[in-house]
Image (cartoon, rainbow, N blue to C red):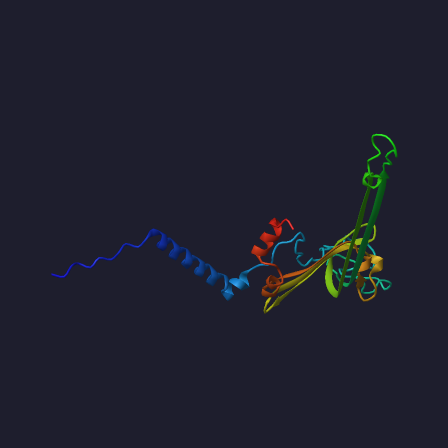
Length: 240
């Protein structure tokens, strides 16, 4: 009679490794799924995305007994179509240019000398005068420089979110673009003077107070421009 075949029992370590490998493959497949990529939302930031601001409902004007009654959307001739109410769109011309440089130069030098002349007669006459001379010197030279330049030129249409009594208005808005290799967005908020809005409803960003500009994105190209997590780890613990 042939001996009964015996199957060796699988090691628990091998089974655990196979389970971990299967979980990693499944997680990678879900991350690479187009449906999951479409559902991925942009990373949160300190700037809250602004929803389109709706103009305030003026309601029914009280009867004043006058023949003329200003209707909703009325603007006098001297004002024209210039934005000035909540919900009106305003175009921000982004003309931001920043340039900074710094240079440091430090240099120091110090020296000293001393000597003893032994007597020519007596018990110490055998000493060599050249052997009793001493001198010291030290020098330091350090230099450093840093320079940074950034520029942003674009246009962005925002809406007036609040009109204040001092003739200023809070504007905010954003523009989001869904590209084939990721998402890009530009967000803007700040305080503008209504008098700075020209006839075309354009305000340069240099005339915006408390301006907050955010231009960022995510996706494959954005991830490729960042250093990997292992490189960041070694740079963090490197003493050099």
